[in-house]
Amino acid sequence: MMNFKKITTLFLAGVISMSLVACGGEKETLTGNQKFINVFEKSVNARWTEQDKPTKTSDEEKTKKNVAILEKEIKSLEENLSGIDDPVLKKNAEDYIEGAKQQIESMKTNDYKLKDDYQQKSDALRKPSLMSMVETYGVKINSEHEQIYKDFKAQATVIDKENKSRTYAEELGTQIKLEKVTEEYGSIKLESVVENTSDFDFESISYNVQYKDADGVVIGTDFIYLNQFSKGQKQKVELMLFSDKAFETILITLDDVYIKN
Image (cartoon, rainbow, N blue to C red):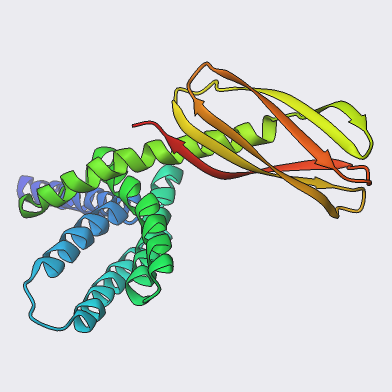
């Protein structure tokens, strides 16, 4: 007959075994979404710590240093992308990484126009994704970097509004239907009524217009400008095409958009 001591030993062994299995299962959950979140938190704080270190090197050396810091951060994040199965988290991760790459390009170029373009692309991707990682996924920012994050958040809020307003303006452009009003002596008058159904008050929205024949060849161009286009407002668009050829299609693409502060 099995004695009490032996039964107790077997029971404890079973408990330990179950605990190990449970711990192992818990560890598994950290290989996907949570693992990336943990790596992101560590990486972003480490980057700010490195960038905050004082240096007396030349501007060129500072650029090299900052590029190296960003490349290290990107490498760390890319190595942990594959385990993510949350689509929103995945997009945040990819946007942040692409934004960091655009930041590197901005640092490397001496062309001021390109530098500004890269920086704008970087800000539009990186700042909203960082804000989402903190606000939605619980990434913690070290106390010494809180002011940096507050600045990022303020900028990200503005950028997010700009991104959404631009997306709306692009969609609005695809919905503009220009109707032929008159046609005489090689000139065609076209009209449309455009309504702002968004929550944005626009300073202006501008579109490029291309008229194409049956072969897809551009036979004329024009411009649509919606000025002081407030929410709920309707504006009439009038265009004139001067051409001895008949157009088959009209392509309207967004040129630029400005929202009121």
